[in-house]
Image (tube, rainbow, N blue to C red):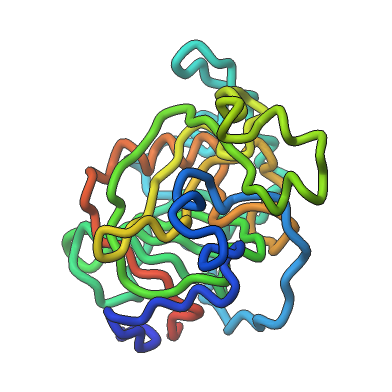
Length: 244
């Protein structure tokens, strides 16, 4: 199926964290920060959830506790997560080339397109920043257990965050870091969009639009996605994919 048409030259930033005002300095900080709730997107009807692909194993083991790079990531209580948002192999609804990442912000899904008309689908949570960018770009680079640096306007609202400013070296990696276990940094035409696909310890935000973050996955899922996508992977962000 074809996705909602999004021109490759489209680059909708709409007040994206004041990037125009902060200029080049803004490129040193992450846009994935605490922001007000953003409403106004009505999800389209989605198809029933298919059974888990046997090659993925059980959901219990998929979301079990894991030690990663020395960090102990807690297990996910999967019985409390809508099964639509479990990692699973589905028929590809995007029509994109294999290897492409597609973020459907209307339905809170991220697809990694595979060969043979299939896609790996992950549930995502969104914040206001997750809705304010759309278009085609590339995953310029990736980072395991990244630092987080709040932008100046956020520090202005909450001076306690000054200790995490770029000048002070940002928040060190860890389980409570807003970027979680992994971050994928999105660039368009060689310019940082400030748009991130990243992990989060807040598993209960998946499938929801809450106050913080760009596009967040459960930490177990972002680790899996990180290992599947190389640098320069194409990514498309769109507000809806037609469903059968």
